[in-house]
Amino acid sequence: MVDEAFDFAGCLKRVRERDQAASRQLVNELYPQVIRIVRSHLPRRIAEEDLAQDIFLKMFTRLDQYQGNVPFPHWVSRIAVTTCIDQLRAQKRRPEFRWADLPEEQAEILDHVLSDEREALPGDALAARELVQKLLDQLKPDDRLVIQLLDLEQKTLVEISELTGWNQTLIKVRAFRARRKLQKLFQELQQQEKS
Picture 1 (cartoon, helix red, strand yellow):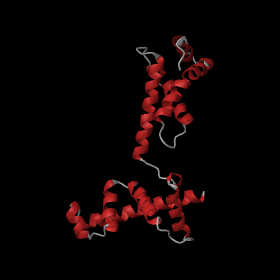
Picture 2 (cartoon, one colour):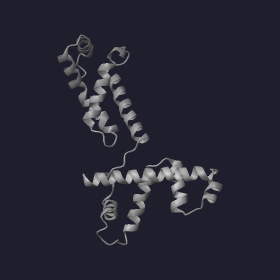
Picture 3 (tube, one colour):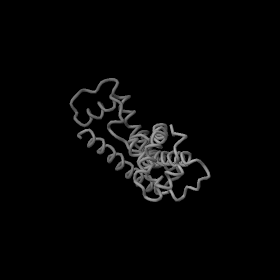
Picture 4 (cartoon, helix red, strand yellow):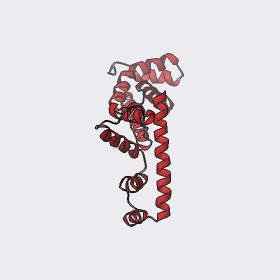
């Protein structure tokens, strides 16, 4: 919690005069507040210390924008929340799919497919289906749709064209690109498994 007795105005004045000790004091005073915000909004696969460091970097680079209309800890809180939300949005736009994210049974299925060492078990079909769905979820909606219709539902190009309004050439191109993307995702999972 931020100490109410801490002299933010005096500390900020010294920070603006490039006093390194005052900068450290300011970070030490605000760290508990910032780390609490980071932990409550933490995007997956982002180290909380890295995100806290980004927040403090933004705080120092934007210090000239602080007008004093709100208490300084509130201003820093806003930077922290905005930074976390920006990270979450970036992850949503570019989701990363990793071997470590797979449940154990899906990792075993993938390992089986890659090594072809053991017999398929009855429960493998469900785990394989879930794995395929996770891979498909990494595709753009149109690419996912064309793979779903063409490869999983075994519809003809004519049927897909009637359903989507796309011409057959576009369907073929989308399917080709989507398959390459799936292959790339699968290869990335293989590389992660080996490392």
